[in-house]
Length: 113
Image (cartoon, rainbow, N blue to C red; front, side):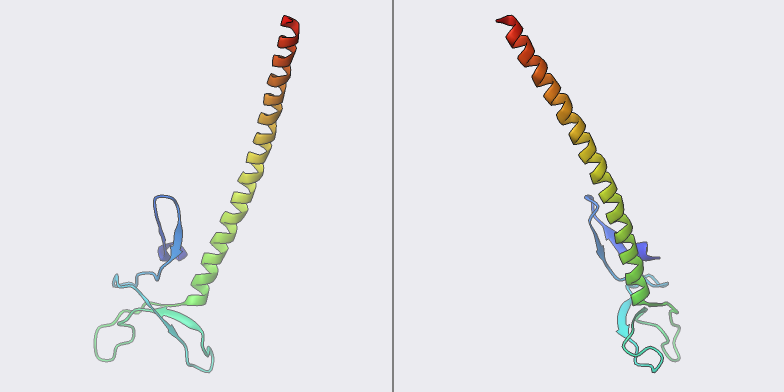
């Protein structure tokens, strides 16, 4: 669900933003103080586990959310590196064509003399 925590603009820029919980409220970041997970960050609804009131059950470990985001960035980086390599090959081919055109132009100039 990491994509739900990402917002994008028209130019494709993405930034990390807390996801919306089940009741459509932005989740808040807290840190665990339990023995099993001391200091571990998690996201929860502001109404999570509210005593005596209806509450939202949204809870997610934030480090998992951040790892998913990091994995997505890594995949995109690999994709961009592949595209860059393909563009560099195309540039090389275009330079060869330009060089060939220049060579033929020079030959034509020499033939006209």
